[in-house]
Image (cartoon, rainbow, N blue to C red; front, top):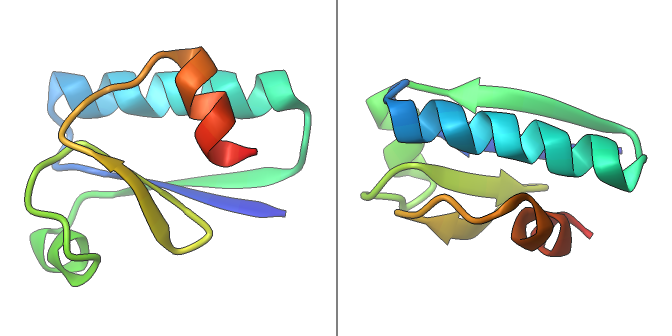
Length: 77
């Protein structure tokens, strides 16, 4: 099961990242959990200073931008 985390304080870009990540994960059809990480200390613990960011199984895959659903699928796979 993939663990997907969207890091961000809840801004519009962060919400869009969460929507696209969920769409990508559903499109791939595997099992996953999606967590929104909004606490500044938690976000910084990942070494992320620009949000939104996407973390897949503990590894930061992208930060500071909102990739397309297709790009997120590649990052998750």
